[in-house]
Image (cartoon, rainbow, N blue to C red; front, top):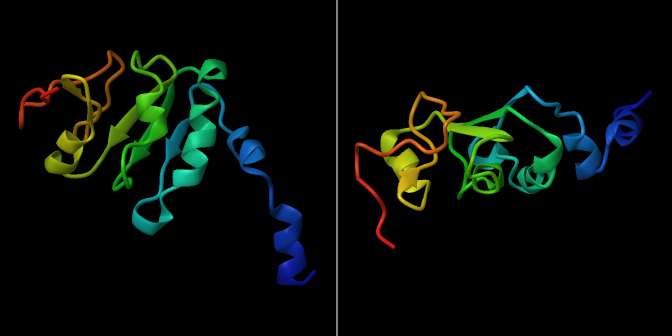
Length: 119
């Protein structure tokens, strides 16, 4: 089989691609140009079907939808493994969504670096 035929056989829709994610899975997002910005939205739409999915990113452009769609962190536990400044900038409300090298189930971790965001 040639490469083009094999590639065509393996291409799936974004909805089908994120159906591979099951409750309790770890999902590692690529970073920079490889960040799954498009697929992130499709995974976030599955929030009510999933629980305890850990999503790790390094440099995600903007704020991942899996981080913002679930403030209680029951469905998605989003972690950024980048620098403290990048993590402190990924904020909603008065708390940081992510903090370097840590994961939180309880929800947001207050940022010790820059304090609460202003509204």
